[in-house]
Length: 483
Image (cartoon, rainbow, N blue to C red; front, side, top):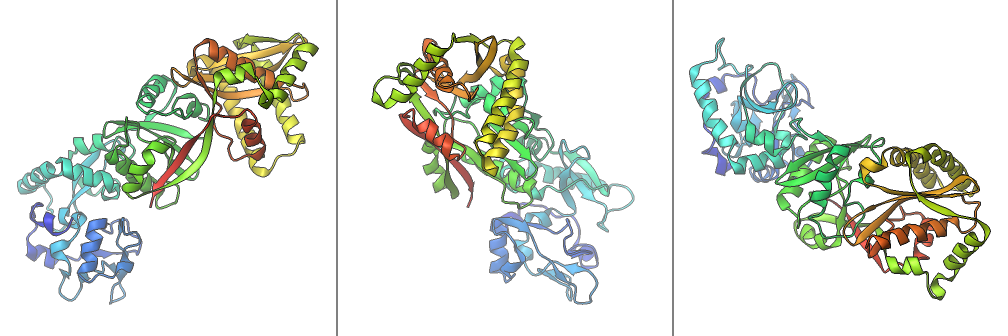
């Protein structure tokens, strides 16, 4: 920012007005939201001009920390000299200061970004002078330039909250559209109606990871508030919970979009107010090299388990001896049927889920496993209620006149089928192995070459169970954060 922009941004308030003003650069409270925002480049320039770095809590961009007024009345920007009423870094003052008394802020309903004039400025008179309108028009043209829009998108804290004493002059359409609504209030709720849109975007990414589909997200709508928007031409899905906002998927495109990543992190950073919540999950391994080169921190997440479908159907050889024996025993002892899930099976499946949960609890679960089990009930209920709208393939196992097991999965791609949920009466030996094999058999008949059983959530017993089926690959999965 700094010097290279000084000539770009026209000024209108004469210096004699500024020098006699007692508003700018002064603040009644140390945490005033009116403190100027400095971008990373502006911080570097301010420090080079003698402003102590301690006044900037985040070198990537932050509001400046103010200092007590020497008279004891309020607080001052550390760059302001109260003896002369001059700015010590005037030639490199931040964009936030260069624009004033114009202000960029959200509209009252939060849906748009607007340009306004701060009525606290003494240059403002009872009626809006024509020269201010003309000045605002010139600044509007600069604000709508692509490079300025990108700068503001990467520093969304430059966009203030709505203030009643700021006179709105005009809306900033390009910036409103660029921010995609997370900041400007136009993000869209992610519902079943957007399933096709999300999955079309997921199809751009060449990965077998299970989360690149709608069901793994739509099932958890009771735990997270999902919204979507478009950033730099990519589909972006955000999830919000008590701790803040994160992205369960990266901005979706054929390859990592640097602009979209930067803007998405900027939006999350602004929404999370500095909390260490901002992250992008389920990033494929192929993307980690460019993301690392851009300065992001990349760390592994629990991998997905990928199998050959034919192996899980045949269960051939010594390595599948125990699973094969379990299936054979079940067929000897019960007249077992696997049937497509019907809406009429819902209540019986819910009863089974509660019994299955109790069986798992009596076997002993740690606190994390217990929480996962508690949270999963809403997801199972959603699948049982809306399986068709979610695009799920469901089956039930019946014998002795009862539903004894059920399972749901979905087509991830032409070659990959994902097993999403599985519940089987734990008192029936071999039932879990049998329903899993038959679910895989149905996938094989549809032409799915691979089965993805998702990750193990860090649970040792679940990991042991998945490894017992000999995956051909542990599909690497990563979480990306800002360094």
